[in-house]
Image 1 (cartoon, rainbow, N blue to C red):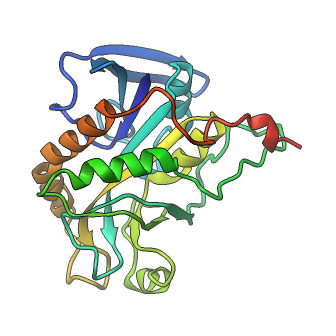
Image 2 (image 1 turned 135 degrees about the horizontal axis):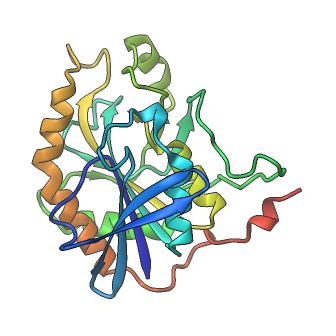
Amino acid sequence: MKIGILCGHHIPDLIKNPEKIKVHTPYGDVLLHAATLGNHEIYFLQRHGEQGNLPPHRVNHLGNIYALAVSHVSSVFSVGTVGSMQMTIRPGDFVIPHDFIDTTKSRPVTFFDDQRVHVDMTEPFCPSLRTLLYKNCKKLKEVTVHENGVYLVTEGPRLETAAEIQLYSTVADIVGMTLAPEVILAREKGMCFVSLCLVCNMAAGLQQRLPADEITSIYKKKEPLISKILQLTIQSLDEKQSCLCPSDVSQATL
């Protein structure tokens, strides 16, 4: 099986001696790091560009997902850092979101600009991958994981205000800037998609300050665990997924 991994940071322990592959897309060239893990082919992609310098509102989501799709990737693992809007979800915890709310304003959100295509997002994340990811998180005693959560996607690059967090905390659990339109575009390409979110701080109004280096510090500390979780999950992944994610996009076309 061909598996894609989207992350805002490189994960050096995950794959060894990867081959760099430049994929030409209608949205620009995208660099993939290809390697094998068990019986699977892995394609790692730095979502913020190879130098990691693109801010959230300028990430080339169309190019990233297109590059994975033309590489015949069938399942995508998205790794991201988030803030918590709930006191029961603490920094250092992992969350596997089951739904999302998109409040972004200026991003391209579809491959279909000249067709009336309405993909079903009732269940935006692959249920099979979510179950498998959660089971493998539970195998590691040092991991605290939340099986469900609603991810609020904000535009960035600024962090949210305390008033925004207070408002959205009534309907969402974690907040970040990169999940959408990744998950939407993956559905349009018929790929299974799951997200593993690392909580790096409490959102605005729930802790005194939000220094950016706090995110980096917690991520570096938890990076070995992220690598373990992904390795365990990918190695236990079956070639046949019992889900409807790859359903024909023609069913969504008017």
